[in-house]
Length: 550
Image (tube, rainbow, N blue to C red; front, top):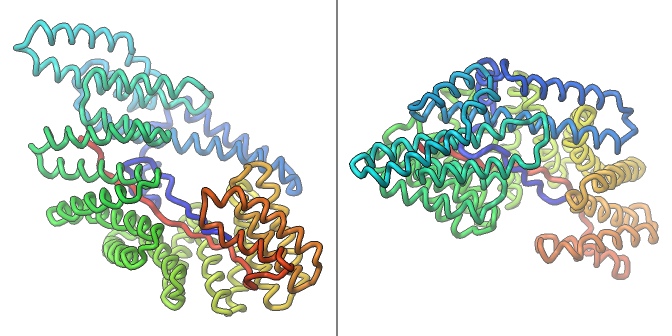
């Protein structure tokens, strides 16, 4: 199967995806969310949807997938809701509260009264202030500096209004994006500050509007360079954060050369800051090194990626010595990425050592936080088994695949949308192992179940799982060519794989080797490669900075 490159789905300017997030979530829940009607309703909706999912029979795959999708959508809304509340908390903490509306909005926000906070910031009233103040700007040159400060405050109000307008997770609102975008535009029209530019760029990037986000990031950088040098430390941290975000944008739109240059600039800035305050900025150095290593791995610059992963790992190990709860997950993530790099470059001994350490760490973390880390344990077991399979250590591979499969089956009972593909991938791997150890009955059954799951997944999410479906089709074609000869079945599976792959290869050239395999299986029904394809779940961690513009 093809590498499953799962990036961290974290919002801009957020660093960790481990226990530190639990502390943040508890703080937000205890201090802000308990008073929120919207939050309570969403939590209840999730509970109701999960109870409905639990009542659907296991053999009703389509129904379970659809209901699971509803549960996942609600959970994503909850995650986005809490993330937006946290960003608002940061905004309220960092901006000066210089207007009565801001004071009232903060007072409501601190009580979890988000609707009331939103109501306080009346767009019409803010706009009236803006218009009055702009007239004063023209009429009173001697008050220009004070007026501009007031305009910046009103821009902050629009900025908060934009963020508050996103806090509607219970009811779908098709106009919410346009309305929020309008508040950002009003903030920008009111005062084109670096803060507003950066926040608007983050919003646009999150919604994949990269062409509009890029110039805003660049303008924010220009403002920083023009006005931000009064406080060199804050200036450099803000520049590094913005450049890292710009690099992430360029990486997403496959502007790799620009992204690499920007990551290097961000890294240089964070290294400078870390010399002054290592306890504050060392995590950012490690984060940027890891980002750069991910990019270099994707560009097959393996020597550079190796050096960067190793340095990031050294920093994260040191951080974990003093704060293991916060930084051990990052240690495991970099180790996993490093093991993946070793696997890809056929350095199996160091890959084995790294995977074993990752497995040990994640098992320990799962003991304390099973909901967050058990799935990482299952992924690591699968990849360790793939390595053992590659090196023909079949007994070890069998035990690891079976443990991973048991875990994924259990996870899929509660969340089929998220985990059924991993069940199928592990079944595919287990079938390949059984084929190679001449247990053809077990292999045929496992390939068949994997294929059935992938077909069901493809019905619900077209195109998403086509590469995974092709993997099992090709393995079945090889199986019926070599292990349990049945020419008709072998040709049929190879033909289906070829028909799927042909339109994909133009946009994804790395799939060409699989198309070649399908063509080879069809030509005289002889495989070009006798090796089965294993499902390798590679989780490359792309992080974003904790520093935001101030």
